[in-house]
Length: 366
Image (tube, rainbow, N blue to C red; front, top):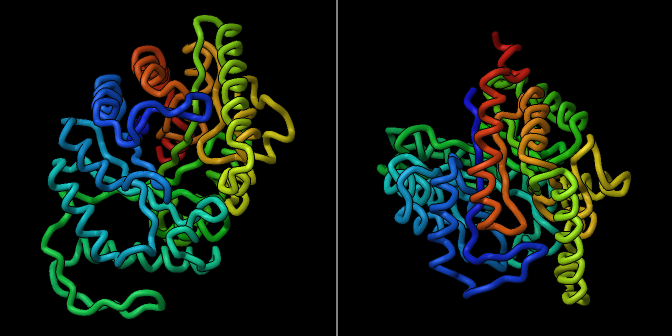
């Protein structure tokens, strides 16, 4: 399996610790951010989904026109449009970008976020719907004769979609609950995890592989880990920067006190609950996995960090690689600056170390 690096392209610069600047859809920032990551060696960039933010698929289309190589990982929530329709949109994007599209399936969300778009199904029903949604999408992408589908959530008759992906369109899947793992086991090409300690990541990989084995897919599914590296010229400098980021984030959250949406963050998401629990145990796990932003934000999204010099963080990433993680999603708190630094200092170091050491998953296959 090849090593893969994913960044993130949002419509506006800003983070937990950095106040948004520029217009909500900042064309110049999107251009600069896209080029920085493409030039820096990222293989893909995630276009995230949120009920308050610009549409991920349309942003991906714009980024496709600005770039030549970087892949477009479009976050997508099943249930808000017909799977056949979404399949045509993604296949069209894949054709326009010459095979650079992929999809990140997001079934869950923070408390209230799904309801803002009118989705009131409970968790188990949402994952059952996602299972069927992905089944219909696959048929839409692959069938060369008209097909019918009569299921619990979707009914399709006489569908033949002419536009197809350039090749197999990869499915990245997020979700930490048992229901999520079961759907991932059936459909995911890449199972995505947030940054947790090594032992928990080892356990998650084993759990997903065991579930995938029931479908003959235990060696077909790959694993991704999302982290927020904080780098410094020295270890002390990196930890000092982490403390500054925390102070800035605390100030920003203080300014937003009373916001109902902020109070709900992470309250109905198993992955977020796991991060909050980890943060409550200690501030730092495994020497340099820093959890204080996760604690501050209620475990919202990708919020744990590896802190240290580029060499130290690369060594920490290698430890995850040895467990079977072959994709890393990195995004910073100072987004543009960090993307450039990751490309210059971190990604080359990880690649160099990986060339000398295969992951556990590869060793098992050999």
